Length: 129
Image (cartoon, rainbow, N blue to C red; front, side, top):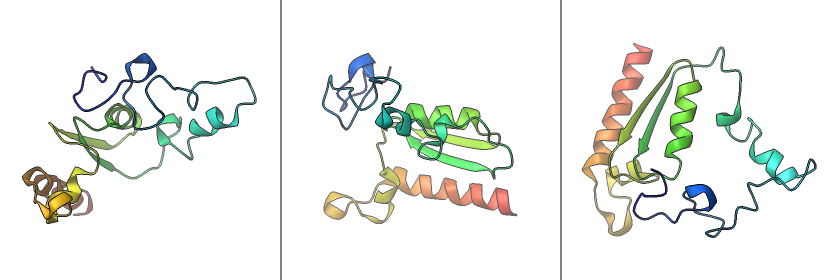
């Protein structure tokens, strides 16, 4: 599913990636017990996806695009977080909500971004009020 998304080059195992190059999984493959890069990438302080204890954390709202390189990580995090809300916007990419005020290339405004911002606003109101 992930490797078949348009616009992404699959890495080893069919995972999309921005870096490293296609076929180069050296940053995420252990080279032995002392491989600091591998260990640090999986440290929950660097990526909460690898955390085991989510007790006492506040509610979480995740907006993610269906073409987002971090879609699977976002879904895994939401599944582990006790009070998570996740909304997947079809066809959207990383940082797509920044286009709500015309911040994208050429200054265009993206309707889906406005919908995403509105969704977060409603979520905040539901949590705080």
